[in-house]
Length: 486
Image (cartoon, rainbow, N blue to C red):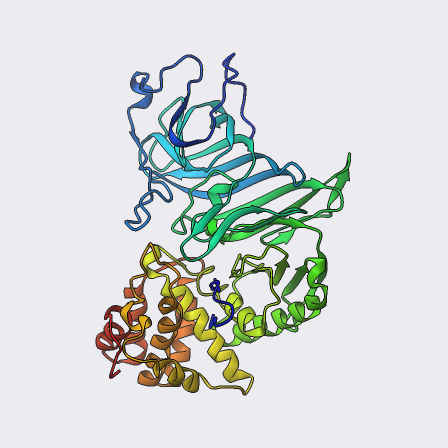
């Protein structure tokens, strides 16, 4: 993500009928709303059918204890979305294919708002209730450990984005006059579909998006077939066949001008802009192509099947690295911001963090990519940019925030970006260019589509360089003062 500091940014399924119940669960933003199917009490374990244990209500990230869920891993989402911008109304059917990681008598899905009308597990009606942003599902039978299962949730309502975030303002599913701007970092996926909303559980995605005729629907990955129009509505089908964190998923909709083709190296390239930004379409398309191909040489092969970007008219004031389609909210991005978001396709999208505290592994790397792009173009070198940043007075806020442990209430602090990038340049100075650039490629190759942590990066840096680097990383990442040596 490119943060909202644009002026100074150096980066940011259908279920069967539930008997004759005919009931639904409404949003549970305060208290608990319970749905009982087939007359069972919500606390009734129904004997041996529920001999397992409940999945945890969080995935285990101590800084975001309610994000994600325990007891299962999602492998695939099938999301059917019908959205009416005029009414700001979304009807959805979410199909989830998962695997149990314990004997599972009950599990949670993250969902904010909406009325849930039906839930099935393995095609059998399931009981469900709402508690805050949790959709609590109790299947008719315990799901055995390590077994595959499927869930389908039917839901509808007006999407409500997260507002007044300390760093971002508004994020999630954001209605616009002609559609929606959908950028969900860190936990806004729950504002438009039920799921396991934390980057530690990546999955493949299929999207079927129905919108009024004349509106374009864009999602991650590649379009499957041609749009189908009938009865004044058009349905678009997209598929992201590579693992993706939930916050990177998008179904951005609106009236867009598109340009499609391929980069010089042959990667599919899709650029889209709101008509207000029509003058930026070619620049977005061309720069996305050039930068993607260049990063493929610096970081290793491009990890996905398409690249590009989208400029929408919602004045978000930030950009987000939505997988294969970075989103730019209400501004014309310069090539530095494009370089940042496309670097994230490697650092953050292909390789994902297990816990938000390691966010510098995404943002510090993408910010340093901006410096590398400037160097590549013959503008300011990374060394010059580093020196300018380092010249900031020792009492400045950036030195008081140690970026190796991102703070949950100030996740996107400038230190995570800039001091994170400075850490990489200090490392480059210490180990030399050959080892440093080998490190970047090896880091990507060894963790493609996987998960990464800071200790793993330190270990790899020491292995490739043959140097002991604890002091350098401690000074730059974990000490809340200005480093003096490295």
